[in-house]
Image 1: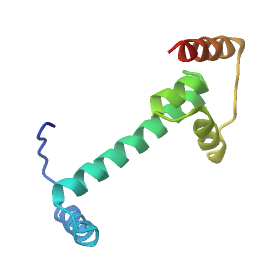
Image 2 (image 1 turned 45 degrees about the vertical axis):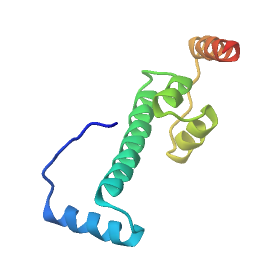
Image 3 (image 1 turned 180 degrees about the vertical axis):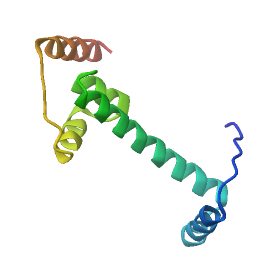
Length: 104
């Protein structure tokens, strides 16, 4: 079972949530969970792209932070015109990650 979280939201958001609820023919809690899950997934993508663009993490690690495949992360970075940088350390990290993933 999940945890209950409460928050005050502007009336305009409540109207939008109700509109979505009516269109989707579901309950308010389901709408909120779906919207929150999408917002968090989007945040993870943006956060990991920013870290990668700033050179703080490798593309492989960015993909893991965003919970995407490496291919998906490469496509996302390319769609945002983020320049690919790949160092020898990145290669070593990717080989290590791939090797440990293959052992599982």
